[in-house]
Each structure stands twice: as C-alpha cells, then as structure tokens.
Length: 350
Ligand code: NDP
Ligand code: MG
Image (tube, rainbow, N blue to C red):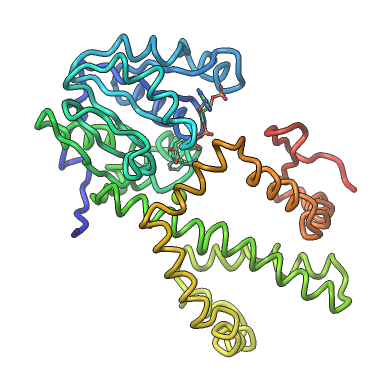
C-alpha cells in the first residue's frame, strides 16, 4: 500500500470538536495524547487507577482519573476512546470494562496495531477502528508539541463504520501534533509487523545481543571491563547521533578512515547472509502470529520466561560496569532503578 503524507492543512481538528475523547491509561503514550488533545481544544477524560504514580500524575495535570468502564459509559456515538494500556493488558480490560458499554458509532483509537491485527481484540462491526501511532516515545510526543512541533505519526483505518473514520483519525493525529511534521498513512498490518520486526531484529533484540556478545569477547580475551564498556556500548550514542542526522554516509564521513575501512571489511562477517536468513524467519514468525502467540502464552503464565530474562540480563557484566562508569559522567544524566520500575537520577559517584 502506497504511503500518503498528510499535514495540518489536509484535515481539521474540528472533526473532534464537541466530542469526548477518553484516554485509557496515563503512561508514556497516554499522558501525551491526553494533554496534547486537550491543548488542541478537545474535551478529554482519562481512565487510570487513581492511586498509582500515573494516576496521581493525571490528577496533577488536571484530569480526574476514573475507572475504565466509567469512562466508556460517558461516551456516546461519535465519541472516541484511545487505548494506551500495555499491549498485553488490553484484551482483558477490553472484554471486562469496554465491550459491555460500547455504542454503535463509537471510535476505537489504537496507538499500536498489535491486538487488532492479531485479533486478540475483535471490536464489533458497528464501531470505527483507527490508529495514530507516533513514531517516538510518549515523552517526546509531549515535549515536541509543547515546543510548537510534533512527532511524525502513522495513521491507519481498520474499520470505517461511520464513514467518517478518516476525518476523525486525521483530527486526532493533528491534535497530538503529527500534522506539524507529517502524518503517514498505512495499514494496521504494516504498522504492526514492521514495528515488531524493527524492535526485535535491530533496535532492541539485535542491538542488545550485539553489545553483550562483543563485551563478552573482549572480557574473555582478558581486556578490562571498563575498556570493553566504552568501546562496545558507550560510544554507540555518538554513532547513532550521526546516523540519525545524516544517515550511514554522514556517520562514515565523520569517523576515521580506519574505522570506515573496518566497517566494510568486518560488518558483513558479523551480520552474515545466514543472519539475514534468520531475520526472514523472524519476520515470518511475526506475520503468521507465532510471535504474538508466544508473547500471549508467556503473559498467561505470569510472564515467567520474560521476567527470568529480565533478571538474568540485569546482572550481565556490561550492566554492572556500565552503572559504575555512568556515575563518572553526570552530563549523561545517568539514571538507576531505585525500586522496581522506579528510575531516578544517579547522584553519587562510585
Ligand atoms: P505504559 O506502560 O507507559 O503505560 C501503561 C498505562 O496503563 C499506565 O498508566 C498504567 O497505569 C496502565 N495499566 C497498566 N496495566 C494496566 C491494567 N492491567 N489495567 C489498567 N491499567 C493498566 O504504556 P505505553 O504508553 O508504553 O504503551 C501504550 C500503548 O502505546 C501500547 O499499545 C504501545 O504499543 C503503544 N506505543 C507506545 C510507545 C511508547 O513510546 N512507549 C510508542 C508508540 C506506541 P498504572 O500507573 O496505574 O500502572
Ligand atoms: Mg516500536
């Protein structure tokens, strides 16, 4: 499907004026959608547990966090709810607190295609189902909007029961700031499958494994952990900044000839045709729903495997030495986990 790029001029926030938008969850994405839409003149209500850190933040921001079911009950035909709960939690909350209160003509707004595409949520045919997925973390969606800009968004229509789904999705994307930089249209399938592939093959899976393996090689060869950390982890940021600004070419322009020569010479030995074959299999597992099934299966099992991996990697050498070295570099604004899920600025030096 060809991608179309839309801007503020191509739609209007008016498609959401006079309507109520319920933002379900006040986490990374939720807080940004709720506040940006409200600042764009849309009536926004928020559902979140009132007694959690995110619930308290919503109250600080002037919302009155309520139960999910109570928020949905307030909506009428033409109103929208935006689903910003973690993907794994969405199906249960949908079945229990949303589905019983749906009215024909309501709009289901997703920020990622996972549950709709893999049919772990199947909304009735008489509501609209659309997605606006900002291509950036929620906190950037908010901070860029406040600066007068916006993070580019993907916009997709899954179901158009009202005949107005596109106007509404576009108004939403414009309301969160996407129209200031560009709104790209695509399908739920494309958004969902490319997003999962990117995070598994490169951004999260590929990168973490590359860092850990290279670190282990240097340690096993007898080099000091501090050196290993700087060379295979810390300096990544510098390289990524160059790629982000001017692509691989600008990165290669900026690094030494020795480094660039080594790039062409060694890169293909690390990521081999065999690795590419594995990447194709990874994509196939995403497309067939095999990955989604594995993810849902572990969630049903209390995320047992998931939590074991998390604990194991927390104690990897690169994490241990990294923590010590980052304390020597306060300009990085290093953060550390002080309680489960609580990250605070690391203040003391090792
Ligand atoms: P977060 O983990 O940041 O926030 C989740 C919110 O949901 C919190 O407010 C939390 O409330 C609440 N919550 C969690 N579990 C439950 C539950 N069982 N019942 C009720 N409320 C619950 O989520 P994200 O913003 O990262 O992700 C939301 C969606 O956005 C996902 O679909 C994700 O794929 C998508 N997305 C995320 C991006 C990102 O930048 N993180 C980027 C693009 C899309 P409490 O504080 O009470 O625990
Ligand atoms: Mg992603």
